[in-house]
Image (cartoon, rainbow, N blue to C red; front, side, top):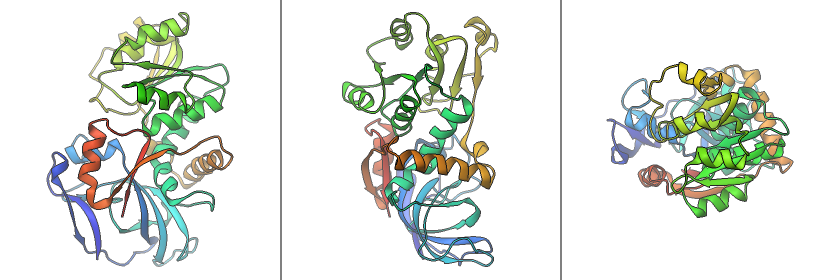
Length: 324
């Protein structure tokens, strides 16, 4: 028996229940993990509300976590009891223990804590593919990162700066702006007080940005297009304010022959080789000091509803975790 946060019907934070769940022995190719930390992400809200569809009801929330292998199933030879592991998987993380396919686990280096591991696998790997695969950030690039004080935003700002880019961020308060400035941003725009596209134009002296990383969606879409130089790239990777509305592809033409993409993490770590490549790059960036992992809130797993209220109310900065 394990404890898990389950959703029996779609809706607000109140639909999450903390309950006992029967956990079978790990099957062929699986391991059982005693979880030490679980990542909290906006995608969890999307599944809870039904914006993203779970395979069936009820289901256990959560996509990333870390912990210790306690038992292994038949055929597993590369993991053993006591191994420290982390993962990104589709649902099932909000639990004290869980079974997971060994093929989708990575071993945590000694210098990376469980808490760091729990936020690196979704947020960290997302930043890895955004900055290295979707658009390869190079010295001299100018990038715009929305929600720069969020879990992904702080990591993206740090890494983009380390790669030699000029980093412009947006944030909703002076406190968040100060946090973003301390984590790699060269400029931070208070989007509630200013037209961020106009400020980007001023900051860049009319040259605008090579790439915009937009995890906000509906509220920032039009301004993001206006912030791009001709032939720049609009990267939509989240919907914190709601999905980007349908738009005419001619808008890309009107703003200067722009490119637009809507990538997702699963397509960038679909193979074991890709997963290990991303994790190795990410862990190396943490160990060599290029990336610092700001974990600003830790909630008990049973208090997941409170964590969702804070997340949706934009009351969190950096990464937050749940502790089983």
